Image (cartoon, rainbow, N blue to C red; front, top):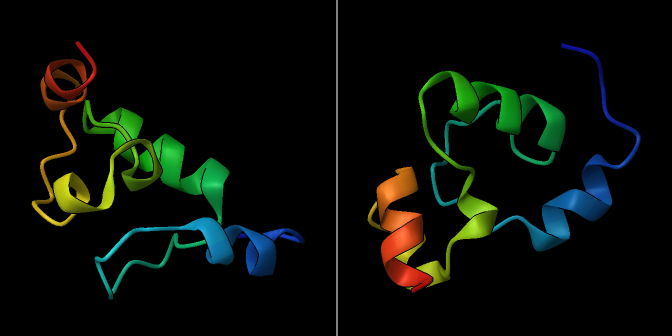
Length: 65
């Protein structure tokens, strides 16, 4: 994985609580990973929802009606 020049600034806004994640702060890798799983990245969810680790598209739609 290539090092991201924006990683430090991205980490300031990243609300992902999954600690062993190797993609934290590397947004393009995070988006690619979650897209493959049919999910959305943590940053698209409010903190209280992100902590549930339900990153499904259905959950995103249900909280944004």
